[in-house]
Image (cartoon, rainbow, N blue to C red; front, side, top):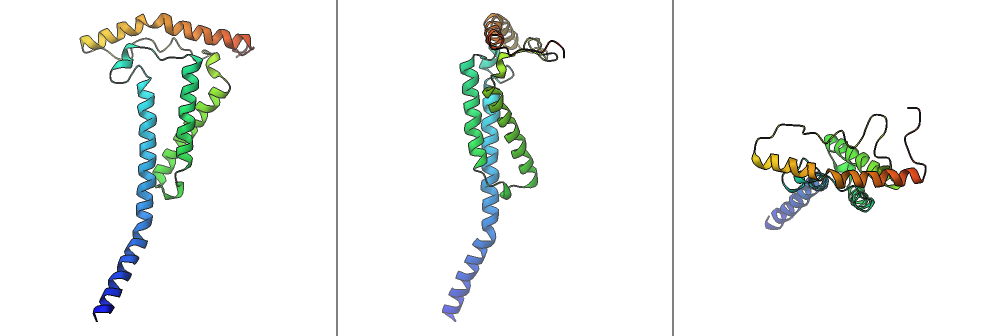
Length: 177
């Protein structure tokens, strides 16, 4: 009886591991996707005027070097995303993965065509988003906004350099839009 109980327990343990393996795989794939998404969001916030601290006092760096680095970061994230087993994800997480993949692919594609060399078009431009989008509640928020306004010459200079590079290669808004 002792050996039979031991064998039954071993079989039960193996059976439980086999049944729980997909759940562990699901959890692993989902946690990988969540970690990847968190890295992307953190990166975006770190370069945005809307993040928590430092960059609220500065407009984004739009030099070709900075934008190429951003594309490289997107390529690294895309490679990590492609390594995740999508079949192990819940339906909602699969949609999240598709959205993230689309976003990263677009960023990489934009960089390959140097989209930043056309910093405005018929309905979008870099200067429209400079105004405060919400009120200020603290002295620090006012100071950060003033610092951003002082950063406008650098930001406009980078955008102007990008536009000139685009014009030099014939990359511009069409005459008729």
